[in-house]
Length: 129
Image (tube, one colour):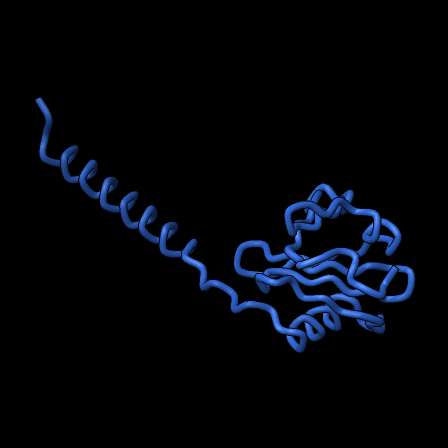
C-alpha cells in the first residue's frame, strides 16, 4: 500500500519538474530581431571586424543578413536565432557562389556555420564585375 509520505514526495517532485519545464520553455522565447538596416549592419561589422574598412555593403532584401566587401575579403552577416553570426571568406569565393531563385548560397567552410543563405535581387550587383 502507498503511504502518505510517498505521495507527498512524488507530488512535490512532479511540481518541481513542471516548474523547471515551464522555466525552460519561457527562457527559449526570443524576441525577433528587427530587419537589418545599412547603419545597423555597418555597426555589427565594425564590432565583429574592428579596423576593417567596408568598400561596399549589401543588405539582403528580407533584412536577415548582409554582405560587405573589404579589400580582398567578403564579410558575411547571417541571422541565427535572435542574433547574427559574422564570418569572412575570400571575395572571389563570394563572387563565384551559387545564386539561384534570389538566394545567394555561400560556403563558409566553418563547422559552426557551414553555409550562409542571403536573399538578394541579383548577384553579383550590376557594375561590380
